Structure formats: structure tokens, C-alpha cells
Image (tube, rainbow, N blue to C red; front, side):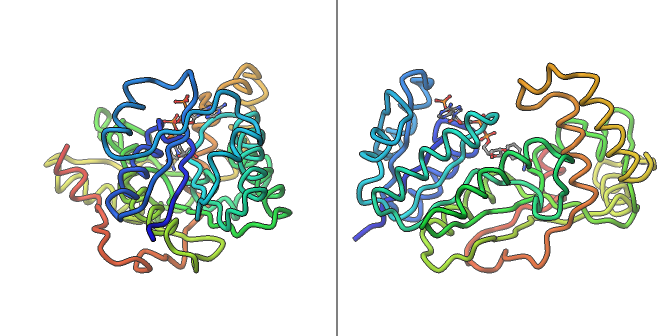
Amino acid sequence: MKAIILVAGATGDLGGRIVHALLERGAVVRALVRPASDSEKVEKLAKAGAQIVKVNEWNVAELSVACQGVACVVSALQGLHDVIVGAQSALADAAVGSGVPRFIPSDFASDLTQVAPGENRNFDLRREFHKYLDKCPIQTTSVLNGAFAELLQYNIPFLNFKAKTVAYWGSVYHKVDFTTKDNTAAFTAAAALDPTAPGILRIAGFQISATEMAAMASEILHTTFTITNMGSCADLSAFNKRERAAHPEGENEVFPGWQRSQYTHSMFSTRLEPLDNSRYPGIHWTGLRELLTAR
Ligand SMILES: NC(=O)c1ccc[n+]([C@@H]2O[C@H](COP(=O)([O-])OP(=O)(O)OC[C@H]3O[C@@H](n4cnc5c(N)ncnc54)[C@H](OP(=O)(O)O)[C@@H]3O)[C@@H](O)[C@H]2O)c1
């Protein structure tokens, strides 16, 4: 019998990709949607073959109906405390009450186990939910993938096409973890279908230092990228704390400027190892060369 996987956040960017990857692997996919979810996205999920389960209220009673017979709940929700802690806790309660054996929370980040509390607000929310999840009688698997590699296409400090610079904090040799959204989704789908998956799975499509990034970008894009040292990781941490204090309105946004900078801090201060990339065969890991050549 085919495993039934319930995907929360199915209308989202990563969640939609996870739905497609699960369908490709032959799973029966239930996509959780809300009355306010974008109808075009919902229709696309249905056309692809997902069963659409609409919950009017995101409460344990309604979510329990969606959880019946499910082998694993995958959450790709995005939001603040009400979502990452609140909505995910209700989902976990429904899963436990319905006898679902496994839960994959919406982590999909750098190695948040290596980040101190207070350094990254969005990681703090995920850790708070983990504390709740740890008390639930359900097997969990976190997928940690570093930064989405697609971020490199948007002039982030680590690869700025306009300024032709590669900026870094800390060591010029520190390798930053990147994985594309599709690779993250494919691996997550495989993990959802794997009852033996451990508590944490670490993946990276590529890991690259500032020196390597400047050399490769210069070669592929036929122009010279210069390396810029921005200070230490402690400098960046202090900057982030000042920015957060100066912009309290950002507490109500998922990605205020200071949170993006907190994410940059985690990129330069953590490292995913050892990698579990080879756990599931058949995933073609997109590298930086492929990403930049396709640009
Ligand atoms: N590592 C990285 O570089 C990186 C970058 C970006 C994201 N991520 C991670 O990937 C995961 C998914 O992010 P994403 O960018 O794919 O998110 P997204 O596109 O913003 O989608 C968010 C999803 O959450 C649902 N949602 C939001 N609020 C909800 C609520 N109150 N109740 C129920 N559902 C709610 C949305 O449903 P509706 O359509 O109904 O609103 C949507 O399906 C997150 O954990 C995020 O942190 C990682």
C-alpha cells in the first residue's frame, strides 16, 4: 500500500516542491490548505495529483481528520511565533492523537543546533517548537540544508554581481552550506518515506568558501570578483543585536533586515557535517557551476 504523506504549507514555495517530489516517488499526498490559500496554487496541487484537504480552522479537531491514516506529516509552514510554534504545535497534537508515527518540522535551515539562542530569531522559534515536539510521542526528522542556493542569484553580500564582490565574515576559508530548493524538496520527500530516518539529516548541494567563490565566479562569469572582509562573526553578531534593538517593528515581520543579517551570521558561523547526501540515491545535487551557468 502506498504511504500517505500530509504536507502542511503545500501552497508555499518549498511545500509545493515537496508535494511534487513526493508524487514523483509514488506517495499519496494530502495537501493541507486554508480558505484563504491562493486558489490557483491549490488548483495546481490538485492537477498534479495531490488530494486537497481544506481546514476551515487550524485546530486539533480539524487537523486530526486530515491526519487519519498518515505515515508522516511534513511541515513547510513559514511565519512567526503563531505559525512556527502555534500552528505547528496544533499539527503535532493532531498527528499524535491520530497515531501518525512521524513528523518533519519546518526547519530547512543552517545547522541551528550550532547557533546560540538570541543570534537568530527565526531559529529560536524553531528551537522553541522542538522543545514541544521533544515531549510528544512521535518520531521526528529535521532536514538541515544550509541556505537555499537560489539566494546566490539575488546579489547577496557573498556574491554581489553588481559590485563584483564576495563579502565574508570570519575566515576566508570557512565553507558556507548551500542547497537548491528542489534538492531540499527531493531529499525531504525521500526522508518522509523513510521510517528509519534519524532525528537530524544534514545536506548540502555545495559548500564553498569566499576564496573558492571569488575564483569560481570570476572564471564562470568572465570578470574579476574581489574578496571583501567584513569583520569577524562577533562583529556581525553585535551589529545584528544593535539593528534588532533599533528596529523593533521587525519583530512582526518574518524577514526584517536584521533577520536576514542574522541568517548571514549563521551562514558564516556554522557548518553542516557530516553530510547525509548519499542516504537516498537518485538525487542529482545542483552545484554552483550549474547554478551560475544557467543564470
Ligand atoms: N534555508 C533557506 O535559505 C530558506 C529560505 C527560505 C525559506 N526557508 C524555509 O523553508 C520553509 C518554507 O518556507 P517557504 O519560503 O516555502 O514559505 P512560503 O512560500 O512563504 O509558504 C508558507 C506556507 O505556510 C502557510 N502558512 C502561513 N501561515 C499559516 C498559518 N497561520 N496557518 C497555516 N498555514 C500557514 C502558507 O499557506 P497559505 O498559502 O494558506 O497562506 C504557505 O503554504 C520555512 O521553514 C522557511 O524558513 C529556508
